[in-house]
Image (cartoon, rainbow, N blue to C red):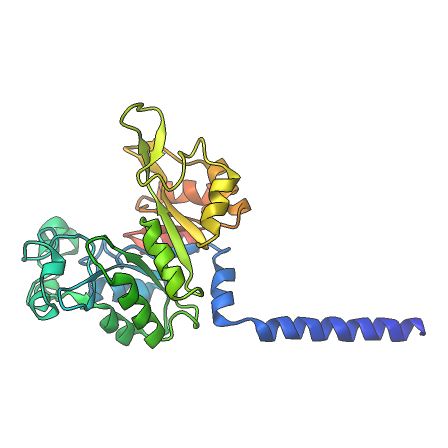
Length: 309
């Protein structure tokens, strides 16, 4: 075959192969590829500026252009998936007791906005008064496919059936195949249950490192999901990579560093991007970006977005 014909043939094959790869890329694979880039994750929305987990906080974060809206999923007594962080109502509402003991109608009667005025007077807004607890359906109806969602299964032991209810809603809104959701949990069994319900659902294993009770200089993970950062091995990370596409971890404990660049690079080398929570000060944001973190959870996404720009 003449040389020019071989070159032409190779060029055509390369072009065809590239086009085939591009055509085969789905929204879900695009989402997973995007995890290699730095992600700005709005922790309970822009919760430094508006009451956490409310539509006002999520609207601000969405308006600013964050990569993910982060939220905590729990069940009401009548099985509705609601967005609320604490297991009890006192801190961020005018109710009391466990959230799973109330029906959705009873939860909707609560005010989840007024508390914010006293806690954050510089951002107080009378429009926050009377804000209702959101359902996951309401959040999806409001933002649809215009953003991505980072959902935690909160206290699954107190919310039996949460995983089934969550996957049902994610599938109904086509959030998984369209690459619009990550689901995170500290509870490994909750993540394994989610994987069994829908193997395509991208999962994040949350970790929390702190000193052990026996030895304050030795760090342990509170659920024993992994050894401490100084003892963790490739095999430990690979075990997580069997079901998860990344990890979320604290960076410090009471001001002391618990993970370093070596930890981040080791996780990444084993196929696990690292997202760090909850980082609100610009200096710490800069430090963790320099260490190679793949994303940060923050109550002040405006600060992080400014640094990323």
